[in-house]
Image (cartoon, rainbow over all chains, first blue to last red; front, side, top):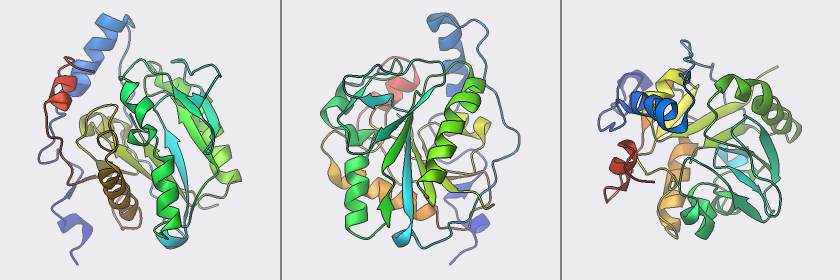
Length: 173
Length: 85
């Protein structure tokens, strides 16, 4: 087995086949000029978040799903772009409200962005230990990223720790 | 206290490099179809297995791993040009 730094799939530099180069500028201009948030800009983090070791084998790990797909319990108010988060029971009937992608496809098959059913199947198959009973939902489009840190992140951390998850899986939309 | 292990899917490595999460996996699928096409359970399953498996690997912090998933039509390319949703 090769060491991680020798693995050709792994890099902290631009990836081969990465077709997203330049999209940060495209998105910045879109948010400023089309959405109308004139002072929008990215908030870069120069240092990576530290890695925490998975303390148990994956087959024993409790996985918490964190979604930015704008999921909310059916019949309740959707998330806005203010950086709030919701705790959504994984067995809840859901709806999706999001300004940044076409939710019609996910309304047909939520697993395309909110893979609760597929993660439960992986738990049933023994690939993971279990799925945490609550998913964390937020909106992928939050023009003021600092609000995510002050609003969504504390809720997410509290829930993930309360439910004794070993691994948080973030799935964007 | 030890922190919780994390792994993120990314569809846009160029933005993920700005955010610098501990570990991300690049899946080149369109926005709104992160795991794959509607009803494509096999791809949803394959993506999740591949991404979750990376969480157990000893990658250095800040690593983005390219996953072997590509999209068949031009939806993703149009989205990246802001010409499709």
